[in-house]
Length: 183
Image 1 (cartoon, helix red, strand yellow):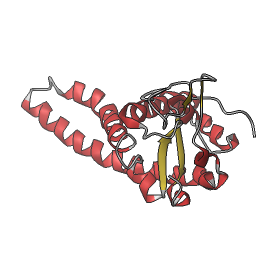
Image 2: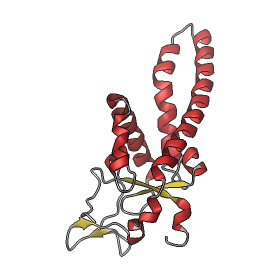
Image 3: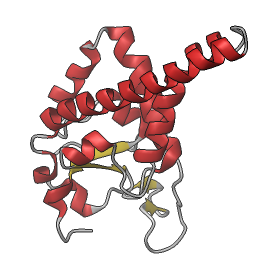
């Protein structure tokens, strides 16, 4: 197997913070926990993530529709002063809060990911945290529309089914049921 390199963005790591650290101070390199190298964790992840995205998009649509109702109320109540800012900033806000709360939360998965039996973890084996969730979402919304969804083909060629935005945020997505008793 090819040599593994750390993600481009290393966040929230506790390098040298103790014996559970995944940072090798002698060799000055990041180590991945052994259990993450099992290929069974990543079987079928690409398809499951596709389905999870559609479920999450449906949830986001419902939340944005509710925000639209609030925006309409603000339009009437403020004679249109708050309508445009709510419309422009509201939709991205919903997506980033959803990512920070779900990917960065204790379950480390969006509702769609949980429904499809997936979970996220940081490259170094720690919980991704809210900032990684936000970065992952930001990278998704920067790379995917810019390439017309073609960048998602990246996941077809990655042995773990990781997309570019996963690499940039330093996140791994794996099948939660395949981990039973490994962590």
